[in-house]
Length: 111
Length: 140
Image (cartoon, rainbow over all chains, first blue to last red; front, top):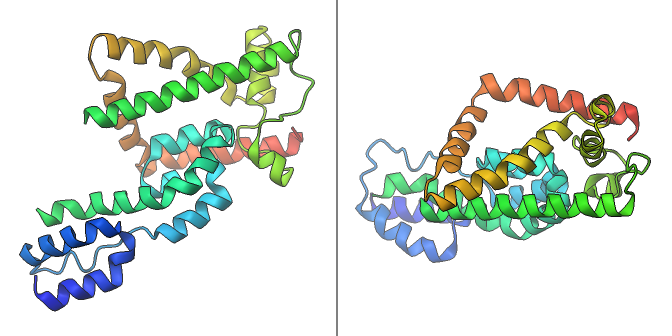
């Protein structure tokens, strides 16, 4: 990928990834072939949106459903957000989890 | 893969332990019948005063343990699912750990994939919403 495309990608979508992953993503993207523009059009989950969802309806497991953890979402739903404790723990974890999921989604295109 | 499996098993074991602790606490608090008390452990109910889809499941499980199955259905049919999970999960986790297998993890991944399809997800969402509406009308 060209340098300016990589910079544009990191400027617009850098917030969806953990900061310590950004250098690795940059290096990999520079080496990656994106002639079809798949990487630039990829959609990622917004960690801030997920945090808001987690605070508002996290006890119903909606945040977990949104990031693709369907099984844990069901578990959270039927346990009333893990007796409320899991729901509160997830307020602090969900942003990092979302960034990890975004990284997992991008991973196949980097190697 | 193994790390993911262990993390899932740890989480499931934790949830089961918390479930048993909660159940023991309820039985210890009210050994003859726990059905007269309101759900005190629900985060949503305490904050919004509105019951959540799984409100009443503790009473439901206690009713099942007392053999009052119709009462259990009235309180929350999810009680049957939760009690089955509480019984099956620890045994399944122990089986996998002792025999160094990952049957539960594989089943979980398959189930998660199935749950992601519209064919399975849509009816389940409708059932959960219907159960929630029933909980609200019952005023649990």
